[in-house]
Length: 101
Image (cartoon, rainbow, N blue to C red; front, side):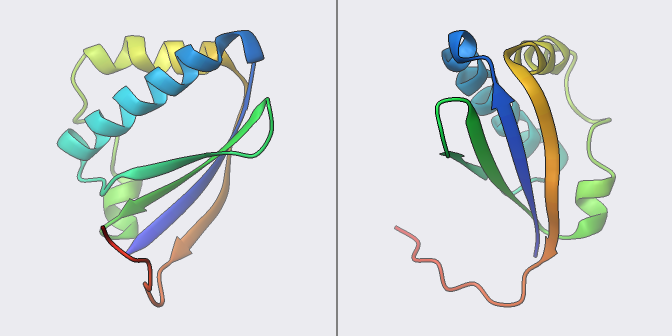
């Protein structure tokens, strides 16, 4: 398994738009690109961290060309809500002890 950690600095007035766009984009990536889903965490009023899982690095590296055209508008909404988007870490999973409910 391969994991990526992202950082999002957002405009506080666009918080709901960001969260909605992040959710929609994550579901599309899961459906069309082979992603295994993501978790979004809030660090402060303007900073969010997302943890995304992929089956392997190659699937992550080759993602983005299978999304439907509707993804462009969602991606634009998400970018417009952010002042910065960064990939913090690209990680190979060694062990997984998370509890699944």
